[in-house]
Image (cartoon, rainbow, N blue to C red; front, side, top):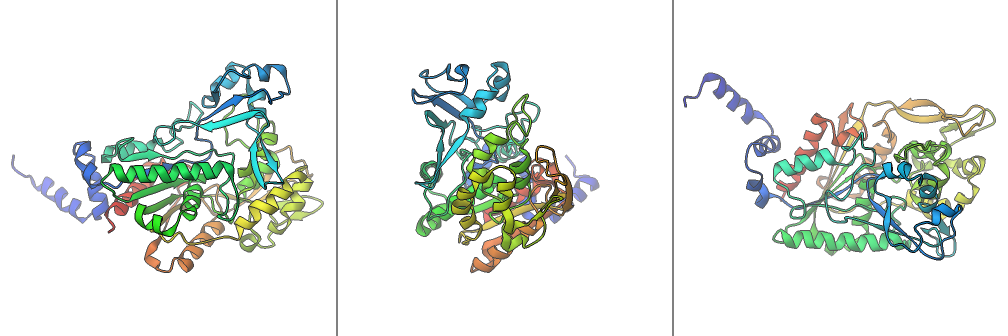
Amino acid sequence: MAITPVLRLLSLLFLLLPLPLREYLSASHRPNDAAVGELHPIILVPGMGCSDLEARLTEAYHPSAPRCGALKGKGWFGLWTNASDLQAYDYVECFEEQMRLVYDPVLNDFRNLHGVEARLTNFSSARGFRYKDPLHPDYCLADLRDALEKMGYHDGETLFGAPYDFRYAAPLPTQSSEAFSVYFKQFMRLVEQASKKNHHKKVILFGHSFGGQVALDFVWSTPMAWRNKYIKHLILAAPTPSAGFMEPVKYLVSGTDMLYVPTATPVSLRSMWRSFESAIANLPSPTVFGHMPLVITKKRNYSAYDMEDLLTAIGFGHGIEPFKRRAVPKMHYFQAPMVPVTCINGVGNKTPLQLIYWESDFNEPPELEYGDGDGKVNLISMLDFDQKMYQRSGKENLFKSIKLDGVQHTKIVMEEWALKRVIQEIIEANQIS
């Protein structure tokens, strides 16, 4: 068939595209298996609430209501797997109780409620996690997974998942965490197995939102020689920085709508949420937010220096000890992972920076004053992370920061144009020698 002038022009324009984008667009038109040999294995670490959790009730469990003990002694059941079932079986109240964590001051660690055992399901599969709201099935990296499969990735062969128990927060290397010590061992085995399956190629780790911080914490937990052997690249999309941001403050004060629980309200989920270690993991750091008033009431203002006073004011005084002993040390800890890192953030979005509870009614949603960010994570926290990475990476080419104007926190792995940029970075990570 003769090449028309239009086709010739299109071919020339195609050649002007950046190489990674040309390869991505070409991959969508060739058989999926064609690119498998060229790809490094990749492991996806999803955001908060995506993981599936099962529970088992032992004889030590003493339910607050008799019906909550109906499954005692009957083996494992889905506790956080299908949120619609919670309403169908009138189990919301029992769910809130059985999801709770308890802080142990002797061990300085969190654990399940006495008599409740919990475990992750479907670890290692990129299809082993999902958002629980049936109206938004694409929220937990579904679009990214589909795009990777079009590139030639295959679940269980070159594509994997590392969901985690989002109730916990990863510890410092010097802190204990029963939950994360188990998870990190699973994660290490998965990396090693993924590498072995793919002719000992290094592995790309991809984390979104809270999963971005988990992926970074995982790398921190590993020996340097192991990282050099197994980690190809760490890609973080809208990670939640340890320097904190304002949304966790709002959730802690007024409750959260992050978890889809039919019939529940943010306030009704607040007590459960406050029991999670992850609820206190990303409160604003004084070294980043300074003395700026973050929570404003008629009686007084609260800055990042006043978080303990705020916890008392909202009736969460028992959260002060774990906050001081586990969360605060992590605010001030930062080590470059010493592997190639790409961090992709959205900017240019209205992002809560100050919460106004003028009458100190913490049961009502606050008035909001906004700054810049991705709609959830504040720009000031992103820039602090970038600065630390550039300063401590040793070699500047180990770290790359990308800011995408106008894309929001969740949409960064969903909106077509932003997703294409994410895919471009994964392609580049595959190519870097």
